[in-house]
Image 1: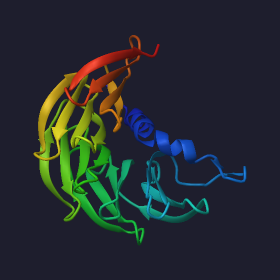
Image 2: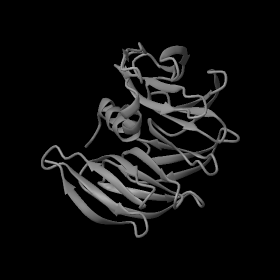
Image 3: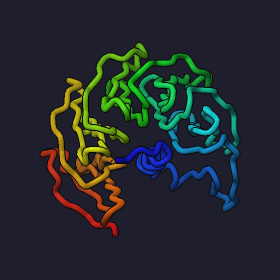
Image 4: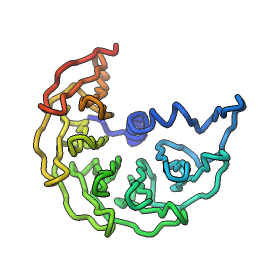
Amino acid sequence: MFRSSRHLVQAYFVATSLVLILVFSITGVTRADGASATVPVGPSPFALAFDPTNGDVYVANEGSHTVSVISGSSNVLVATVTVGSSPQGVAFDAVNGEVYVANFNSRTVSVISGSSNTVVANVTVGSHPSAIAVDSANGDVYVANFWAGTVSVISGSTNQVQATVTVGPGPVALAFDPENGDVYVANVDSGTISVISASSNTVVATVPVGTGPVALVCDSANGDVYVANQNAKGSDTVSVISGSTNTVKATVTIR
């Protein structure tokens, strides 16, 4: 069983922040002039989100229950926002310009206004929210509730929970595919991926993958979904799911 909240954070961080890490690192930012910068944030920074409209970067600090806001143009800390207990997931909504933060130990999602860097709402969700994804088409926000085995669907226009979807045990990571409108949920305790249709907010498929799926990402170009399976007793693998058939088309052994 996969129970460590720290491991949850690390898995989610890897899945959702890989692209950001290529251009921005908390511990060292490489600028065009070749210089490096170090930006101090809160204790235990484990998740990132990027606002492409103004270049700001949001860092969820699990250890201080805060979100650090870094200006992407100057690489300086411009705000520190207090949120709920143990923030472990963060996502930016391009539709309304708000930032959503999953607070693992307080059963809430904090909503931060991207224009003022203040909390404008706190939304109660399921037990131990561990990951967040945004449907960029309609602004809905999907929250994986680890202990509840559910996904809460928050309306970005009202900041209210409009649906609760039952998935597999231990949902720990989410990914939204803008091409087919599906949301993929990694259920670490059942070795499955739940596929939620964003149009109906219902599970339309359950895909068996490897042991311990802890992270996933969608390739919008070909519709494939890549799932990292962390198996402590054997070889770690990556399952490749076809977004058109919701079946595993390949399994890649990592070690």
